[in-house]
Amino acid sequence: MQAEHVSLPDFYMLWLRAISEVRKVTGNQFVPGLLTSLNTRLSTLRGSRAFKMALFLDPRFNYRGSKFFSPEEKMEIMGYINETWQRIRQLQSPASTSSTRNESLSESERNDDFDEYLTEMYGGSVNTDGEPSETKFLQQLQSLDLEPRQNSNYNVWDHWLRRKTTHPELYAVAMVVLSTPSNQVSVERAFSVLGLVLSNLRTKLAEDTLTNILLVKLNKALFPQAIATAYNWKEVERN
Image 1 (spheres, rainbow, N blue to C red):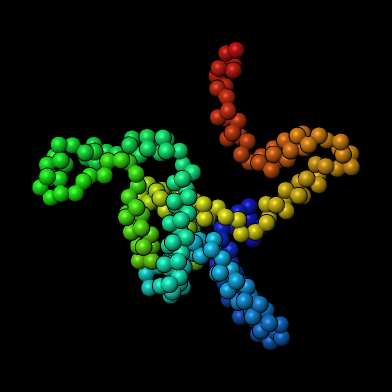
Image 2: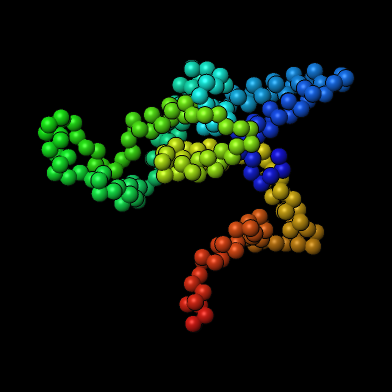
């Protein structure tokens, strides 16, 4: 639980693991009360909209034959996920999104004379506007509870990274949901760093200076990559 980021499904799994371990303890008078508290808190967590979406997108909880969610809950959660996807679409740049989708179309997916011929014969029309199919998105969403169950140590983050191309819409939702923090470890670490920087010997630091120092200290792991791509070093050396 002290990791830099613990996703909501992993947090939930850790909580279940804690309950499992406490149940093994015998001869301790505090065990019944502790189990009651853990299970009560677990029920509260499951009432969270964010937790519901996260667990629905996790094949360790939502799989073929799973009784984790009732049919009514599944319909409710799919509505939440669809709303989240619609919100993501609204925030995306229409121009860049359309351009990217059009570039990704293969020659076989583009409309041509033969498609027009098939349309004359059988009716309908070919989707050429580059917009994602709402029907396809809903079908992929509904098919999540038909997939096989994964073990408790399964990496759900990698699971969705592998589906970035095959399930782009669900992937976008999963990245938002799985990025939701389950604890305040990062905030606590930020306060600890602030205490080290803003010491008794450095009480007159300007607000901007303090912000910049904290930005560097809290993100130092990202700086080698950021610096490597921030400048054209060959150009700098020539000058």
